[in-house]
Amino acid sequence: MTPHTNDTRNPTQVHAILQGPASSVHATESVEDYLERIHELIESKGYARPIEIAAALNIKQSSVTKMMQRLHDRGYANYEKHRGLTLTAAGVKVALSIRKRHQYVSEFLRMLGIDEKCLQLDTEGIEHHLSPPTMKRLAAFVDYLREHPEVMEDFRNQP
Amino acid sequence: MTPHTNDTRNPTQVHAILQGPASSVHATESVEDYLERIHELIESKGYARPIEIAAALNIKQSSVTKMMQRLHDRGYANYEKHRGLTLTAAGVKVALSIRKRHQYVSEFLRMLGIDEKCLQLDTEGIEHHLSPPTMKRLAAFVDYLREHPEVMEDFRNQP
DNA sequence: ATATAATTTTAGCCGCGGCTAAATTATTGT
DNA sequence: ACAATAATTTAGCCGCGGCTAAAATTATAT
Image 1 (cartoon, helix red, strand yellow):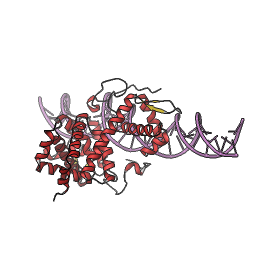
Image 2 (tube, rainbow over the protein chains, first blue to last red; image 1 turned 90 degrees about the vertical axis):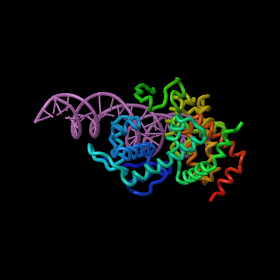
Image 3 (cartoon, chains in turn green, red, purple, orange; image 1 turned 180 degrees about the vertical axis):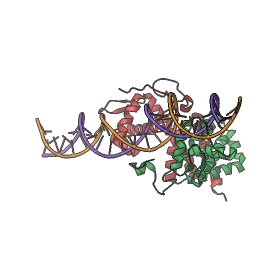
């Protein structure tokens, strides 16, 4: 099962191939989305069932099943069919990282005065594209703006 | 040629299906990348050849050919094989929009003090995910920061 | 205990956007 | 004019991440 040979990817295309199990490359956007939601579900209800994951991501259950197998193969989750899903340390790490990015990005967009609906959608897109250095600087900046509310206040009262 | 029937996409998945030719949905990230580079090439050299598009995007020529056909089908370009490629008004519009987003995002990240290499990579990722309202506010904010350099100066001189 | 209902999984499809290898078409130098 | 070279296109492959429909499994209610 899961042949997984025949990797003819262009390395410069794929950013890096470094370690072994879990994060040989990067989690894809889709994988990050799944891990984010699954982690939330496990936190709030203690478990993550396909039916709820599907609802949370607004996709079909059968797509979830397929991805659960992938998450398992890539070392982000432990999965046995009909027997539930848990996240590995690697999976939790990705989930927490994306959550942090989500929080900072959405706080920043909120400070900018973006309407909540746009904010939510754009955050979902942007959060997958912040490298650790950028994340670090953005976080520091948001923290700074939080402590110096006069900046955004002045910005909002612009001509 | 180009059958293009059988669209069983989930509308909520796909954000919208509104107009007809060119932008029935949104340009994908990949399409935006192509249009951005093609437009640059046409501006700087007067034409955009597959070999140069491929070099600019760091992909293979055959992938470019395939995409050129798609850009044509979707109304972003006029393309006849062996006869060159031009952008339609719709294609130019997308290219200019992505360029503007690129410029503002990279200026913002530069203000944050991100290293040029990261900055370039992250900008490429982020620029595809700014809705018009967010773009507008971000642009205004970057303009504000440009006119008030003391803000970023104070931020950089933080403990 | 078993029939019914709910959930999960499989099988098989699709388009996207990469790739390689091989054909085709244009261009260039002699 | 034509052979050699360069550029382009085609054919066919792959993995991803959606989908539907049908099968299999598990849970529930009588």
